[in-house]
Image 1 (spheres, rainbow, N blue to C red):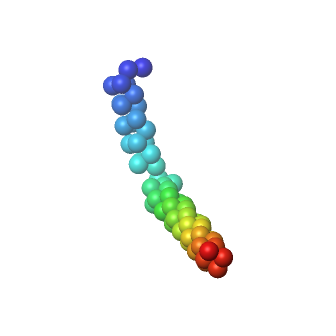
Image 2 (tube, helix red, strand yellow; image 1 turned 90 degrees about the vertical axis):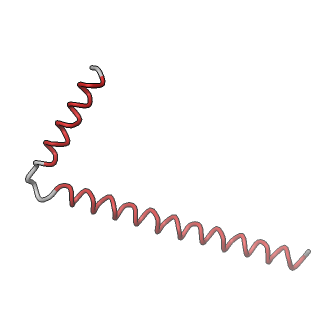
Image 3 (cartoon, one colour; image 1 turned 60 degrees about the vertical axis):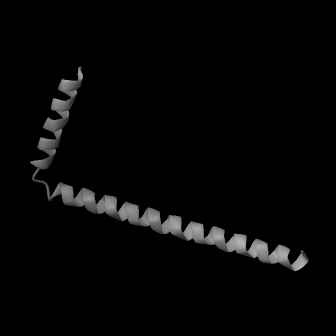
Length: 66
């Protein structure tokens, strides 16, 4: 399968997907993707703040003895 046929089949699949009448699939997928991205950023932010907090505690601990 060459590149032209691959591109045509991809365009056909996108057109078929966009003409699908099952409850706005674009909106559902966009909401799921956005929610997943939000959760990822929330977990990443919490993890990085915990790591910063522990590094601060380490510096304070060694500051007592140094």
